[in-house]
Amino acid sequence: MLHAADLSYQVGYGDTVEIIIESPYLLGKFRNPDRSIQVVRPDGKLTTPLIGADVLAVGRTVEKIQEDMERAFAPKNPWNMPVEVVVYVLEQHDINHQP
Image 1 (cartoon, rainbow, N blue to C red):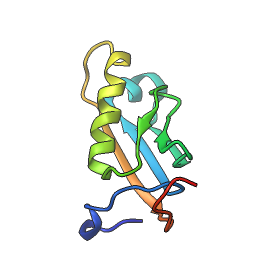
Image 2 (image 1 turned 180 degrees about the vertical axis):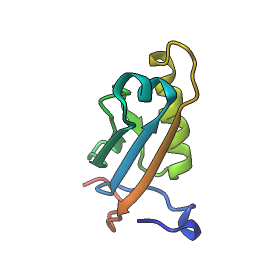
Image 3 (image 1 turned 90 degrees about the vertical axis):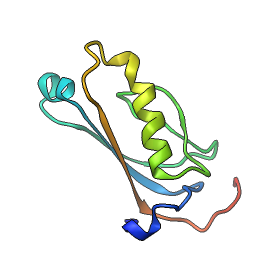
């Protein structure tokens, strides 16, 4: 997992990430935050079942991915409740180009 000093790390192809989506809306509906572990696809994107939209990951920091996922979740948040998306890089791969 990345440490605080690595916040500038740009996600790459094949990296393994954990995505956690938390919101009072989700806790009321599903009783748990949405969690998934994914590998960045060859097209450089990630998709979570809850968001249902592709989000570009390659070449971006986790902070930017989190912002994009929060924006993608907005249409599925009918009462505009606060949403927090947290992305952790669990495993880095030394792949600097698309396979």
